[in-house]
Image 1 (tube, rainbow, N blue to C red):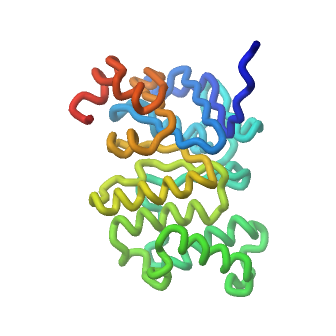
Image 2: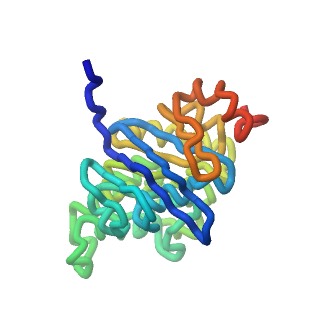
Length: 252
């Protein structure tokens, strides 16, 4: 008897991308089940960021395809991909530094809900304001709603970037090193937030801190020199000899 088909929210098949003759991504296939927390790891230069850019439409593949929720989105612009329910939180924060926390999140919520009537007074759009407040509560930023974004701590700026992504009401959230540069306390708080978010949406993340990945991921894909070296559970990845050799030695 054949195995039942998995309920995949994301499926990338045979992705290939070169830059100047160098294979950044070489025949990579990635399948992310709905509701899972899937991590992508690998040494610097292994192709993690390029893979994310191929998925989100920031970079077009030379070969292969990307399917989101059963629809081919290969090479589709990020704005169109986002409207389908995919959002990305960046490694380098992309907030508007001179706007308040509330304004940053509200703009994202308004753009997602009213992409063709962006000129309407935002405070008059009750649903947008209500959604903004809910996102701030969920991400622990409600008390900072009037704070200018540039005045936030590094940890709270990263949290704000995540809140901006959540304001678009995604079904799949891509996180690019969400705990980069954070203190241990901020890292722990972010791990708990990601766990909470994963109850309602699928998460695909890049993260260099191995203790974070091993404690939070359902499945881990290991990239090396643009190709998939191994994929498995945290325990399988931790004990795999080739993974230890190229990436994990000294990190566990």
